[in-house]
Image (cartoon, rainbow, N blue to C red; front, side, top):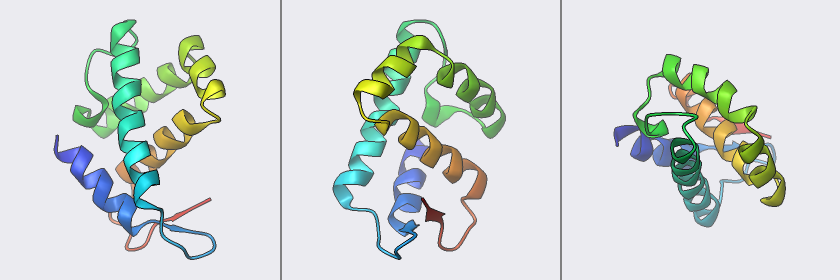
Length: 105
């Protein structure tokens, strides 16, 4: 899963608006959360491919399905928006992986 390791490296370069790096525990959490979203969404038939193995176009199409899924919405709410945050970061990685120092909210 080349994209998983690439995502980790990209997250290590991310700077918050205050200039600080993401904590290693936050990075690990985002990686696990993408794995969990993949397992959940594949389990209920929303997606049929691991998120880390999707092309940008495939992800863009599946991203919308995931965001609108009631199971995802419920789990995200219980997880204090951790799921949406992980997906937004992954989306940022796919679309901005050439950015030298990515900034996040």
